[in-house]
Length: 121
Image 1 (cartoon, rainbow, N blue to C red):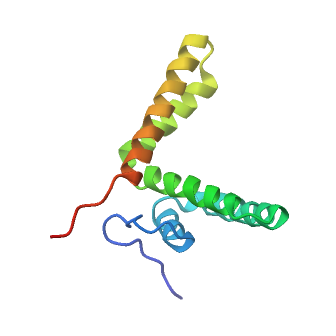
Image 2 (image 1 turned 30 degrees about the vertical axis):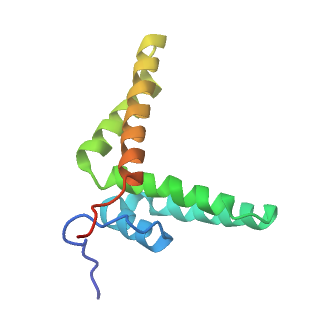
């Protein structure tokens, strides 16, 4: 019987490959693996149907963001709380505040993912 262990420390997302993204999701949010696989299959089906790699690039960008959110507990909690609030908020003002919080989290993560890495000396 083999056991799977999570990597020590955060898994880097410098690489936007499916393997890197899947490794992060496997270690920090295994409950999302089925969703990841389903989205990958849909992206490839659309790519074949349109003769374009855009759906594959969109899939990788989306899941790279998901992986970045899920690997940071505080960020994931903040996003999931805002999503829950957006679904349950009754007043338009509450839903708007939740939507703004979701956007703020995703924009912050996107900025972190696109920021240049440290320069090597």
